Amino acid sequence: MAEAIDHAVNDQARWATLHKRLAEFEQRLLEGFDISPAERAARLQERSRQWAGVEEHAAHDEFEVLRFGISGELYAIGSEHVAQVLPLSQYTPLPNTPPYVLGIVSVRGRIVSVLDLRVLFELPIDGLSERNFLLILQSADMEFGLLIDQVQGIGLIRHKALQKEVANLSGVRARYLLGVTCEQCTVLDGTRLLGDPNLRVKDE
Image 1 (cartoon, rainbow, N blue to C red):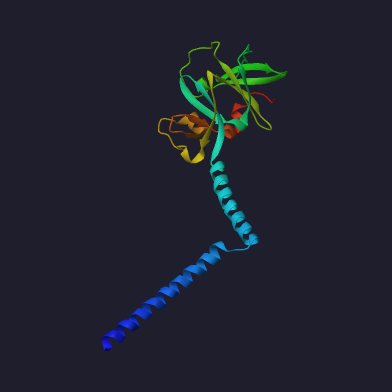
Image 2 (image 1 turned 30 degrees about the vertical axis):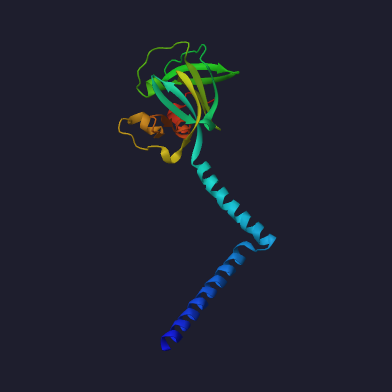
């Protein structure tokens, strides 16, 4: 008799616990799904804001570059520094200038100095040919052209993917280095190039 009573008490306790859990679960359902339209809209807006923040952070990690080749090596520079790219036509050598100054050219009525990065970076020099192009870099107070072999195209590069220190890059190239990608593309710092007074041939 006592055993039967204990069994009944235990059953009642289990049922009470079960009912309590069902009630709590029902309340959570009500709080999670049965909400006012205004609260639902606010939650959706907050979720969208969080997702947008993630996308914006990812977007800020990427920047657009122009890739180009010099002496068999791949280089890139931020497209915000690029004014235009055009085939190299006739140029006029300048006396009493550093060896890396190829000369000057006329670009739409403007006189622009041309720098030979092969000389500046001590790269192999094969001479000029029809494939050479002029990459015009421009800032608010500086403008010059870079002699390049060919244009590789536009692309996106992540800041976090750049290797900042490279053992085989030193001296002048390291001074203008923004980083190197896993594809061994050397990304130049356009701000440093355009802000270096040593590269200023004449006041534009």
